[in-house]
Image 1 (cartoon, helix red, strand yellow):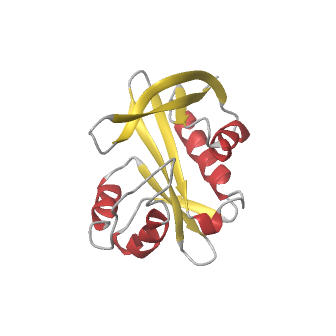
Image 2 (cartoon, one colour):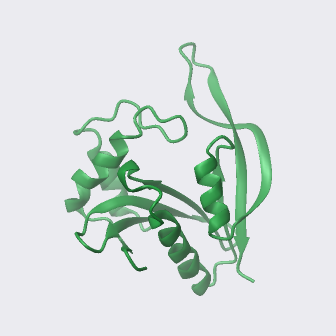
Amino acid sequence: MNNSGLRMFENSDYDDLFEYLVQLENDEFEGYPGITYENGKEHLSYRVQSDEFYAIELKENCKVIGNIYCGKRDFESREVGYIINKNYQCHGYASEALSAVIRKCFNNGIHRIYAECDPRNICSWKLLEKVGMEREAFFHKNIYFYKDENGNPIWKDTYVYATLNE
């Protein structure tokens, strides 16, 4: 990676993590409703203890500008996801980091890497295509993250993208 690097999260990353999570408090694609400086520390603790999260760090100043999730799944596959600080989007950091994670996984014998995203999130699925992933599926109202005021799920559609180690 040229301008940024990947590493595991550290406890000292909290202010950088909180900076980009709070940007997503009311985001329609990846929300963190009700996040505060205090309860946000749970997100850092989870990332520090997990081997499935990589911090994306700028080489020039060691600032963490996002993360890549690389979750273990059955059949030698991984599910990836990403969040980039809105102040650093559209500079190639996400594609650089995601490409590096895909290479690392494939070098370690992983067979398949996939990601799901909201079809309305054009920037997200264009990123997946940029790193060589192909759209495999469109699922109608297959997941929900939130419920409405009556407790009913707010269903969302998803695209599934994947790439194979061939």
